[in-house]
Image (cartoon, rainbow, N blue to C red):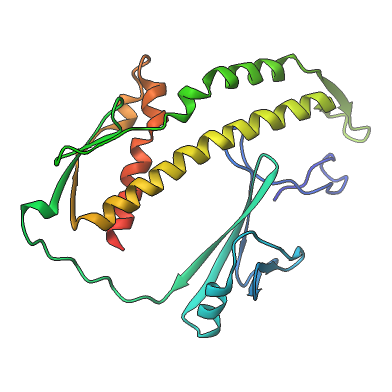
Amino acid sequence: MRPSGGFPGSGAGRPQLAGGPDQLPTLQAQSGQQGKVNRPYPGHAPTRTRIGKVRTKERTDKLLELLQSEKARILSATISREADRWFVSLTCEVERPEPEPREVQGPEDVVGIDVGLEAFAVLSDGTRIKPPKPLGKALRLLKRRSKQLSRKQRKTIVEWNPETGEERKRTVFSRNYEKAALRLARLHRHIRNIRQDFLHKVTTELAKAKPVLVVEDLNVRGLARNGSLSRAILDVGWGAFRRMLEYKCAW
């Protein structure tokens, strides 16, 4: 969290969430520090001091049971904003037994995965998984809303600190600009949610189906430098797919 709305020495203004132009604005609180995270109430309410009781969409009963039985401990909470929605992510330390490794009974228990663009993944048994390509399907609408945002009014105001004589520039946005920016942010969130939902479903199904999965090792960052294929490569999410598959197979 950072103060805003004043020159050095003139006092802090309204708090803002930290985050760059390409990052989600976030606010993190460590347990045991000022502004610490308290145990959630039964139902939908984790709490944080100085903010108070926060109602969530997902229930927190299971987490409360683990906390009461001293099998879990909340380390921190990260509050983030996506467009006009707020999310809280709790980092917890949980006691859980080590998963038992599944035994390989035969060659049919080993599956190779070949990722691609036309077919997101082709398994060694011939199964083909098609990608949703959310960015490609929403590209025209994304360009239209980006143009609408660029046409909205905004102006830069120059302010002077009478004590130090320092110059400060501040950008003022119109109400129509804020509305257009919110519509564009909602579309970006919709595209991201479609991709994340697809990747979670595919990786969960693969991790549960076979004990051994073999994925080709691709230099995604290097392939994304290809100007003609970079958008399609980033749209399918090869890097996130492999990362999800690794930690889900470890479970």
